Length: 493
Image (tube, rainbow, N blue to C red; front, top):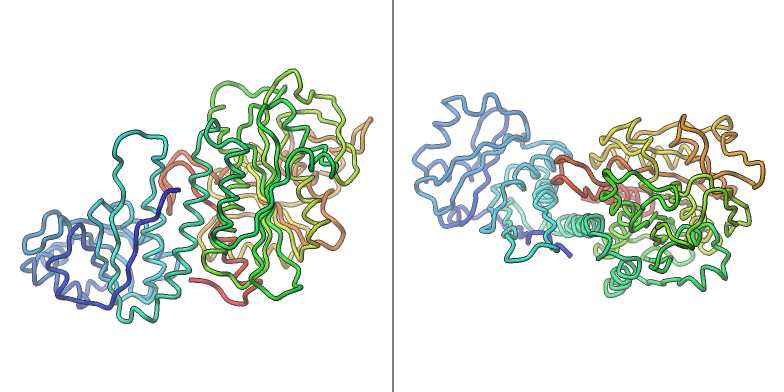
């Protein structure tokens, strides 16, 4: 997988500044005052920083913006990067400021003079999150970001939080790598193998093959993969770091490694983007990796349905009726509405097997959510206000956009079928909501549940605050925060 830049936290050592290679990051607040590190840089550069400030170079800079001084005299560094950031910046402000520095991180690394910051961990996390590039399918030597050294007042006081933050970064990178992979490399088997490899981190991983899925009655999920040569699978990850006997939180992800639409074939234009249709499963895998790496004191299970939706002589046809693990029958009106069929069976299996305290599913489910919310927010649907509010709070704390949408009987009525218990789609109006109503039919009575439609945020065409264009890893930070707040009793760094 793509490895995050190596980060080291040390006590402030002003004597190391003159010989530091790569880039040096100086943080200056709204008042323009220089902290001890900045003063040393200013002295070594014979007043260059002071002259920049006096000349008004920082006046038009917004918080979180960076200006650079290239090849500064008196320093071995190739540049001094001046970040406009209040010493008491919020967590999100600090992380976004760090991301601005992360865009500039080169092969020779960066030394960050962060002694004045109350949130150095978030700053460091932002640098690491933004310094990402997917190069696994490129040939030749590829540039990799160098190490980041953060100077703080008391390194030992922030090391534990920094380790936890680093685990979340690695989880986000794992998600981004999975979402970025082309479908001929990330097959259902390869996806399952990468999940299986996480047993080395302490996760218990079980992969259910097609014969077992048939035995369980997962007719909905299996119907999606009928047309593909790649075998359908369900991968289950267990992290039981909490109290024995405590019911786990269940995370369920849609893992369609490529979606042609099946017999209801998608238009050719843009179909190459459907390598990201396993984004929900990618997020679940990334969260589970983060929880294992940081040793979360919580019980969480992650379940992902891995399929490929292809047209062939064996593929499910529009008009076919399939039977879910629950026992309900579904008339398949559109084979391109396949994600909900995958989730329905995996959600039912999760509840039957683990009796979870709550369940959250994630899926790149509908194009309608992009029309409604664009690429700024994931769609949130829930049957439980307390759980939903907790998630929205966690997402807001991490700067990951999420917006709750309504549900109700009128939308549910759109799924009535004349020949089966339900159809897999309603009409064009409120397509994201009717998809959520379909999934709600597979939520057992008394199970708090959230459905996250991440079609607009899993992979984007322009840079985001924390990531370059492409796979974002959206949801890893928010769900890790939710686990910390809801199951561990305290937020993480």
